[in-house]
Structure formats: structure tokens, C-alpha cells
Length: 419
Image (tube, rainbow, N blue to C red; front, side, top):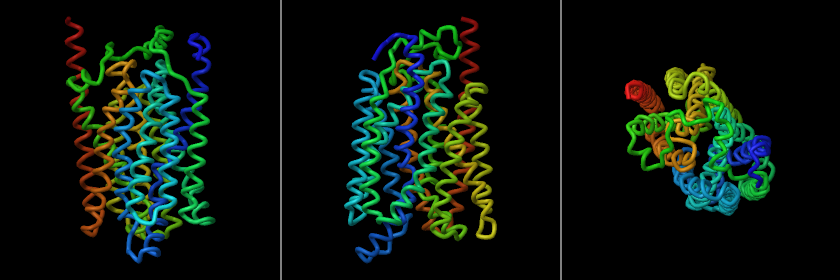
């Protein structure tokens, strides 16, 4: 790769496109509810069980929970070697995971294939693509981070139609095999159009006030954890992740049980929340460049509260309330994923952002485990209302964390002005 600054400024758009396409493919992680119902039906016919899609939601929980840990490992390697190797290995892991699912005859193999391998592969891929994009665009961090993470949502919105078509035509097992092979091949090919961002690349944008770290410092992950801002930022991320992942993990099943939609119409709910997720990532990434990262997220949490209130009111005779609430929550969730890479870079610098953001993503891991379990608990109680009320409380907690963050920042700026 040439380190010529002028060439890199031009090539970074090609790299950004590649990162977006890679994330589009890996966005399949978030359409688990499309796979879950056919697998439950397949296992019931094969083994005489009575599984539902909700019984398999913990497969997604495992995958989502593992993703941040692999983002951490992948981010560490990405900071030193660049994205090519890590993304290629991640693509292969995704392919292997779907192949294992294709030969699964019980849920245990789904945990290995989808829960472990697809989760691991997606984490490796996303840890490189998101952070590399932010590094190549120090002058437009929110835009780059929002666009690349939005590609995950676009993939999650578009791929259900492909997966459904494959399942209907050739069955769930063969559909997984073909989808896995195609995903691995395409991701590996796209790595040819990626590159490592030089550590001093941001210096080429020294005339842009957005290019430098907002905090003015470069901090590693240890310094980040010790900082006074880490806890409110971490808890804020946990709240936003848990709410979104709770719905995403079983939105198709929720639509079926709460408002009585058939399987085809319920699958549409997956696309609806995925589109909302995508809009949230792109809109908030761009808006946060103008209005600030945390104020943008606080507004989105208010939107999520409104969304869960609508979900509480939704019934078979008012499906529009369900879909409107789903859209609001999806936008909020997407805003967190789209904004946090830039927020972490703003506070702790660009140099170590791959690892720093991956550590912050452990909050996402908590949401990945907690969200589906919260939903399962609520369903066993006979109503989703409990889960919705807890999410409203969590959103309020997130807003409080945002206020704490802003107060600490105000104090830090005041102290700096007198020093």
C-alpha cells in the first residue's frame, strides 16, 4: 500500500466502500429470527420436539455476546497489521459457522455453528471495518462510522428476503450451506480492496478541527477504563444495546405472538427493525458530528421510551402501534452502534481506537446476553409487558448517564480553562 497522503485521500473512498460491502454481508448475524423459525420446525419434525423460535433466541444471544470479545482481539491485530488478515479469517469463520448449521440435527450444533463461529467471525470483521473506516476519515468520523455500521443494518434488512427464498426453494439446511459459502467467498475477495491506515494519517487533516481527538489526548484501553468518563459511557452503551438486541433477537416471534401476524408478515418485522436500525446508524452518525455524540444519544433514548410505550399498547387490532414502536426502538439501537466508534475516538484518541472501542463493546456483549434472556423471562410470565417496562427504566438510566457525562465534561473544560 502506498503511504502517499494524496493517494490515500482518494483511495480511502474505495476502502470505505469495501468496508461497507463487507459489513453488508456480515449483517446476516442480525437476521437470526428468520433462521430460528425454520430450524425450530425442522428439529420438531426430525426429533419430535416442540421448539419455538423463542427457545432458540439464546443462540443469537451467544453470537451477539461473543462478538465484542473478538472485536477486541481483531482490533488489537488491526492496529498493528491492518484489516486484511483479520477480515479474511473472520469471513472464513462465518462460512464455517453456516456450514455447521447446514448439517445440524439438534440445537447444540446451532450454538457451535451460529452462536460460536458466526459470532466470532462477525466480531473479527466488524472490529476491523468500523475502526478502520473511522481512522481513514478523521475529518468525518461520525459520517464514516455511521455509514459502515449502517451497512450492517442494510444487510439485515435486505438479506431476509434472500434467506427466505433459499429456505422455501431448497430447505433450511441447504440454504445455510449455500449462504455460508457465498458469504465467505465474497468477504475474502473484498479484503483485496482494504488497507491499513497509517498512524499519522490524521496529520494530513490538521486544518480540520474534527480531525484531532476532541479530548486532545491519545489513551490506551487501560487509561480509558481508569478515566472518570468510562463508567457513564459504558453503562449508557449497555442500556442502548440491551433494548435493541432484545427485540432483534426475536422480533419475528414477538410479532407473531403479540399481534397475531403470520410467519410471512412476521418476517417483514425483521426488515422493518433492520431498516430502522440502518437509519439510526446513518442519521445519528451524521447528526452527532453537528450536535454532539451524547446529546444525540440522549434524544434517541427518549425516542426509545416512546417506542416501548407504543409496544405496550400494541394489540392485534392496532398493528401500526407495534410497527411504529419497533421503528423507534430500532432507530435508537442503530444510533448507538453508529455513534459509539466516533465517540470513543473523540474521547480517547484515534491511535488505539480499535482496541478502545472493542473494550467499550463489552457493554454490547452484556446486552447480547441480557436482552434475549429478558425477553425469554417475560414470555414465560405470559406477557412482554414486563420486558418493555424494564427497557423503559433502562432508557431512563441511560439518559441519567448522559447527564452525568455532560456534567463531567463541563467540569473538565472549566478546569482546563483555568489551568
